[in-house]
Structure formats: C-alpha cells, structure tokens
Amino acid sequence: MKQLTLGNSGLEVSAVGLGTDTFGRVDKPAVKKIMDAASDMGITLVDTAYLYGGGKSEEFIGSSIAGRRDDFVIATKGGHHAHGAPNRSNLIKQLDTSLKRLKTDYVDLYQVHMLYNATFPMEELMQTLNDMIRSGKVRYLGLSNAYCWQLCRCNDLAEIHGWDKIVSVQQHYHMFEREVESDVSQYCEWAEVGILPFFPLACGLLAGRYTRGEQPPEDSRAGSWGANMRRYFDYYGNETALDAVDALAEFARARDHSPAQLAIAWLLHRPMVGSVIAGVSKLSQLEDNVKAAEWELTADELKEVNQIIGAPRRPLPTSWDWTDGELDRGQP
Ligand SMILES: NC(=O)c1ccc[n+]([C@@H]2O[C@H](COP(=O)([O-])OP(=O)(O)OC[C@H]3O[C@@H](n4cnc5c(N)ncnc54)[C@H](OP(=O)(O)O)[C@@H]3O)[C@@H](O)[C@H]2O)c1
Image 1 (cartoon, protein in one colour):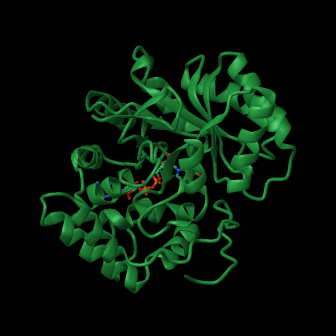
Image 2: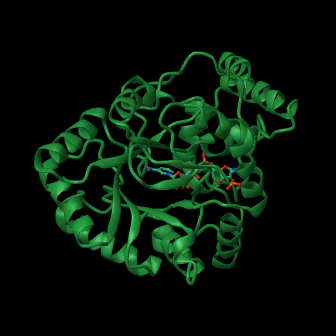
Image 3: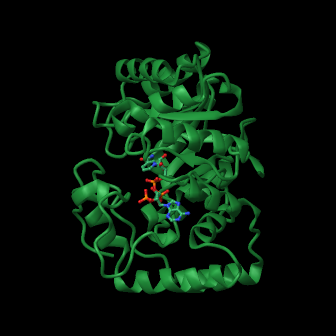
C-alpha cells in the first residue's frame, strides 16, 4: 500500500484509508474482521468520530486494535454541534471519552468536526488543541467542515503564538462535489495542508451501489440515513449525474477496475489529497477499494474521466445541517 505524508507534517498515512461512520450499523465481530483485513492490506489511516454510531464506532475500533495499536493511524473528531459548541470544555471532555472508547492514550490526528456557522473565539480553539498536543493525548491537529478563512486564521494564530499548526482538513469532496477546489484546496497547496475527502463515493452513488429508479435498499448507507440521505440523492443523483455514473462505470470496467476504484483513484490525483477514507459495510468492499491505490490514471485517462464528470455542479450548501438535513438554498 502506497503511503503518503499528510500535508507538510511528518504523519504518514495509507493512500486508501478507512472511514468508519458505518461502524455501529456494522456489528462488532464484523468490524473486527474489517479492521484486521485493513491492517493486513497495509491500510493504516482509520477515521472515526465521537459522534459516529453514538460512540460505537470508536468502541468497536478500540476493541479491534487491542494489541496492535501501533499498526494504525487513528484519526478521530470532536466538536460537532450535535453535542454543543466546539468550545474548550466540550472538546476536552469529548477527547477524554474518545480515548476511553478507543482504549488508547493518544490519537494520531484530532479533528474539530464541524466549524461551519460556529461562532466562538479561534484563539481559544487553537490554544485548546495545542494543550491537547502538550498533554501527549494528540499527535497532530486537523479541522473538518471548515471555511477557508477559518483554516487560514487557525494557522496564522499558530504562527503568531508558535503553536502547532493544522495539518489536514476533512471536507466533502468527490467527483460531483468540488466546492473545496474553489478556495480551500488552493490554500492547502500554498500552506501544504493535507486534504481528507469525506463522502468520497458520494455515499455509494459513485460505487454503483444503487439502481436507477429503485429505492436504496434499507440496509444500505442511503437507506439507513432516512430523509437526510434522500435529500442528498435528490441533490447529487439527478438524471445527468446518473448518466455520468453509468459512463464512469463503463470506463472503469473496460480497464478491469470497479467504479469505486475509479472514484478513489481520481481523488488521489487531486492536489493535496492525503488519503481517501471511503466507508465500507462489507469486507468485499474494502478488498475492492484497496486496489484503487495501485491505479495510476494516465493524463489521457484523467482527461476522459473529467470530460465524463463534466463541469463542477453547484455544491450542496455548506450551511446544510447534516443532522437535521435542512436543504435551504435551491437545487444544483
Ligand atoms: N467530517 C465529516 O463531517 C464527515 C461526514 C461524513 C463522513 N465522514 C467520514 O468519511 C467517511 C466516508 O464517508 P461515508 O462512509 O459516509 O461515504 P462514502 O465513503 O462516500 O460511501 C460509503 C458507502 O459506499 C458503499 N461502498 C463502499 N465501497 C463500495 C464498493 N467497493 N462497492 C460498492 N459500494 C461500496 C457502502 O454502502 P453500503 O453501506 O450501503 O453497502 C459504503 O457504506 C466516513 O466513514 C467518515 O469516516 C466525515
């Protein structure tokens, strides 16, 4: 497995990582099998959050990594607005809970989960994150769902105060969602901050998980997310997008690859992407996705793929509340 460095930090991560928002829906024994297989395949980066599965994601990971903690780069998150503001006291409490659930005394990457629309002092945030580093509980710092100005402000404050900087930002990013390229990725290239795309498969849409004209299966990523996911698919899964999904699948299959491998390999060719943390609910999906790391798209292939994807669509409003699913600014 190809290893990449995250931004200009010293943190090495596998090009294909593992997203674990499915853990909890996926039961504990199945998580253990997925985690063992991931490690055997050379996957190191495992992305979780205080929020996921009501804590089960972190708990199941904690049980799975017992005795092999050093084989993994564990990234977790705190500070989602579902649990209050990402202020000092909430972040400290949540990190301590995450460490207990993960059965470890440090996380490799601690990411502030949701900065959009959050109003609180950035100095306090950066001071808190740096106190976590000094305590030894956290190795590197990341943000998620952040505006470009917030990322700049955090790193400017770090420079002024001599604090550790933000080394990565986790943003919504896939073939049909490219708002990150309008400003965040430009800053990341300039400041050498790594990008971790979330929803890299558009929740399975780009992996061919769903059938046109049929409701998503109940046990699927889309089926398990209720009304929120229906809005997501109304937004990204329109007829034009579904035509592109079919054409992308044909492109991949003609080269003995799967649609998921194409979606991941394409992201790995975008600037500053450090690792692609696709989520899986089955071992077979992981075995499929991991092969994306070996697929170097040629310049001609990239050109053809970009033609199929077409012009970037209007992004999902960043003010969209993932928890309540309010889509308040029209259609793409
Ligand atoms: N920072 C944030 O706010 C944020 C938000 C969301 C997610 N994340 C992170 O990003 C990770 C990835 O996002 P995600 O898991 O929600 O979405 P995703 O990676 O875009 O899609 C994952 C889903 O795609 C399907 N899939 C995966 N591999 C497949 C394959 N080879 N063939 C067919 N279908 C395949 C599975 O669906 P089924 O389960 O239906 O089989 C899987 O659950 C999360 O796990 C989480 O770690 C972060």
